[in-house]
Length: 187
Image (tube, rainbow, N blue to C red; front, top):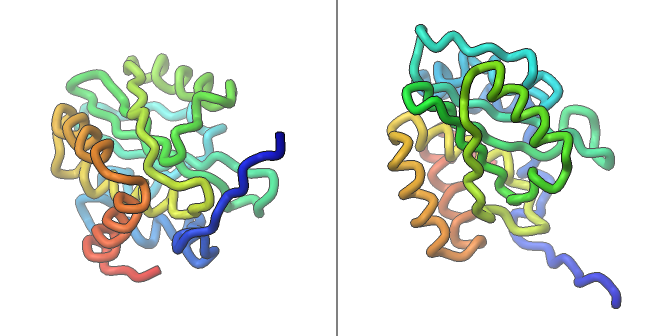
């Protein structure tokens, strides 16, 4: 049986692809969000996860954007995951816009090493937020940084339920618009 074709949508345009530098520059437009990422230092490749030790005494929330390198794209472009670390709950919410990170054993292993080192429990957001042809995973991560800044752990779980009640294209469009307004950027 031939594979199903992947149809392009508005968010398939490569103008939406973001590099680590573009994510850092965008997130720097909001001082609160920028602080959550320790001034951009928590925008990291997945291979850096086992080496990250969070200074929990300095702040109680951290936001990470994790780069999963893709073999078919250049070295600084690939797929992005978001990780919302709530130290008071000793928990990290992993948000994969394509909801696929658990399919490759490398990523869960590295996330588990990070959690073990930082004494955190791993919680999978487990919600599809990005269509197959879309390349806006970086902007979706920025959306969650913006939300995490003002949302508690239970509020993030409530947000997940809201997102599940809408279609993926609807969510993509609205998340991108929120990011553009909050960070004062256009894509």
